[in-house]
Length: 551
Image (cartoon, rainbow, N blue to C red; front, side, top):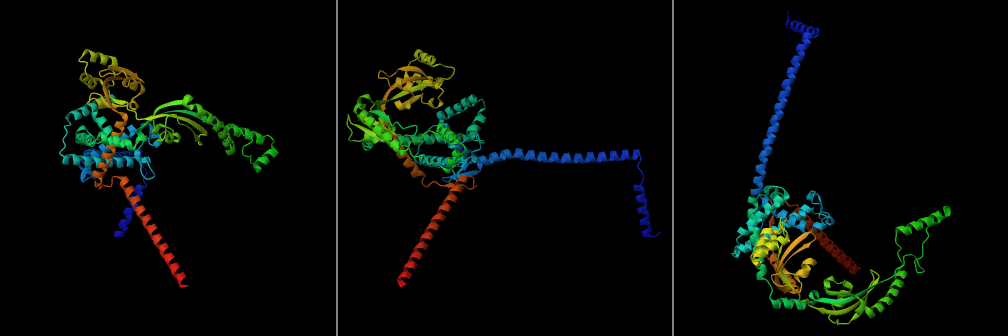
């Protein structure tokens, strides 16, 4: 048999075997075989998936310490030549953000800021998100802090932070307990996801040193009495007060058309509607009159103001006696239309005038009584805001049964006050003014009969205040001028020491810097284009002039 014949025979035998009818047993064996193969396949797949999951978990777990290490060791930004890691940046970022939210809490909705949502998705301006804005402020704070700390070190300034830092730690514990979370959770929620007490300790203590140094600079730059007086002489209108009387005469504007009303313009549409339905136009007019208040014509307003002027002139004759009394008002709080007249240096007691307010369609009859510098002294007090487990009366009783001195009151403040910021100084508030306290507290503090050592417990809107009166201090106008001069001096100082402070963003983390760079480049391009256009126009004009002369 040839080779080809043998191959053909084997092929035929195979085909016959495949065409053989399978018995039940054959099918059972075949099915069992297929199931085993399926089980093996699924086992292989499960093993593979398990390996993938295990690798993913290992990578995830491993990434936590990696990210933490990078956050604590890797340079996030460079400020004033100093490397700032992610932990420090987040610490400053959150301080900036939280202070802003605390300060403008009631206005956040008006600003378009929802703190419950991602700040990177909410626009602060056309080009910056709220996250960009807070990052920018954080960097500015870092610039100031780094520059101030460098200056403090160069000046040999030292400050023992032990007591203040211990108070800080206790405040953290108290706040965490009040929030119902652990100390660790609270620190992370306030200062950033990588923050721990250990990691932020350096930054907290640096802030304490910096603040102490800043306060020293403020004290060193406090103006003298002569400087305060000189500043007052140059800005008397800002700090003086006036007493005056006021009567307001409002114009009686018509609420429906009079003979002076503007003529009504009939439109084609109105005519057509009236032609087809005699009541339609009337109904529409009635509807409009109920939905929209009548707007008087210029002639009607002028007539009403003319009539009101007669009444205002009459009111001027009696305003000194019958007008509403206004006492001790600063220029900033007086209606701008009458403030210049009241604070004119030529003003004298008994002067009267009538001033027009066209926007509000009224007249002011005003009588000047006097202008003066309010010398009412401020006050120094100690204040305890009792915790829930102590009433104001109980605290006062404990104080009276003890030494009953200012020092013992300060010690009770450290024990019982809710105001953690006032614990360190025993609840001391210096140079308190009438405008800086609630009416109830102010009335007690500035009562003419008040004596050093007086105490009281006062409840205002469900909050209790236990007060210890120390005594009088400088008048408000001197305090305000002093604060203004010190603020101006310190602002200039901070500008000077931060003028050359650099910010580097090696990782490209700060989007606001990118936006600033783009805006700067666009501005330069625009300027260059404008200059080129100007040159072109000048050249064109010169060419045309030359051509004209040639003719």
